[in-house]
Amino acid sequence: MREANLELITRHVFAHGEDGEPISRARLAVEARMTRSTSSRLVDALIEGRIIEALPPVNTATRGRPAVPLIPARNSYVGLGMEISVGMLAARLVDLSGRVLAESLDEGALVGAEPGKVLRHLGVMIREILDDLAPGLVLAGATLSLPGLVDRRDGRLLVAPNLGWTDLDPYPLLAPVIGPGVDFSIGNSANLAARAVAQTRPGRPGPWPSFVYLHGEIGVGAAIRLDGREFLGAHGWAGEIGHMTVDPAGPPCRCGSHGCLEQYIGRHSLLHAAGLPPRASVHTLLGRVESGDPTAVQAVEAAGHALGSVLSGVVNLLDLPTLVLGGDLAVIGEHLRAPIAEEMRHRLLSDPLAAPEVVLAPMGPALSATGAAYEALDRVILDPARWLRGEDDPQRPGEDGQPDGDDADADADVPYGDGDDAEVVEHADADVADDRAEPGADGSEDAGTPTDRGPATAPSVWR
View (cartoon, rainbow, N blue to C red):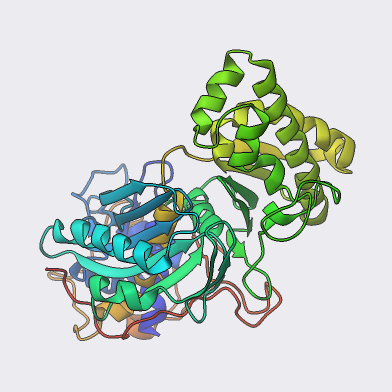
């Protein structure tokens, strides 16, 4: 019971503050449907365990003590997000407040590179940022983003066509540098990038609860979010939009099919259609389009029509209100909007009633690494009791029954029990982020749950 209450309190604190106002102790008791004394003891335990943090009290218009705002703790637990893409290696450390504390990025062509060599180099990058960490920080977990089909239960990459990799277990090569006792998992790059779009920081939902995320680089992937949860499919492989067919008689694809979307909007295809060399950047393509180069303009318009055709099928099937363009597609996104909208006007049954909104994902490198770090931090947010085990449940010093701040009569208004045996009220809350897949929600018992690698021991302080 205490474990579930700790999770409920933690998730409310992390989900709050979208409008810049952290939740107070008194308001937290009301929203969590606990007596203030129960909520207060749990909050004290979480503060002592460095999972949440209390800000200085602020005066309110109501009677009672000043309100004590609560926020996610800073500089305590960190998540390690790692990314391997066809053109970059990344390692990023993010704390519970969402701040990036350290990162290492290394661009390079990785198509056909030997997996062991790539992973060893990534290990060197990880070691560099871990060695620079301040003493006292706790590495809560590590998640690796990979551009292909992954088996999250077994922690294996099944196939990454654009890298040329198959049947790879990355853990043995990364475990020595990550360290013993640190949970390790892997995920698909588009799904993890979508996590960074879906949340404005670890545990706090963003403005779009349901959307499809399109990530374009050399390869093209997608991720589907429904009501704040990721939809992975029966095997965890949903989202391979780059291999949906635009034209069955179209150009051959690396996957063995013909006319895949990737052959129309992938980086190499776009650059070739625009008359640019394969090593040119998408920013060069953008410059050509904005300067009015007719070949470049035509290439991007054709890509937009191909993308709009495929996305129309996705929206007709799933009725998603928002389409998010990321990676290269975000860079040229303003020039893709018109052809996408034109295709949807012709193909979407719902277009006159509720045309989906096309938005651009945040710019910046290695978005999947950020999402991977958020997933690593879920180990703390969704199971805070694990990180407090071995501690006694602290009592509030000077407990005098005087309510604080913005709800002086919280105890009287919330008759849901007292002490650690207070009733746990499980209820839907739009302000609480929850990425755990519901059993059966994706066609399987629990296809979306990654299996952590490494010993499930108590966390160790880095350095």
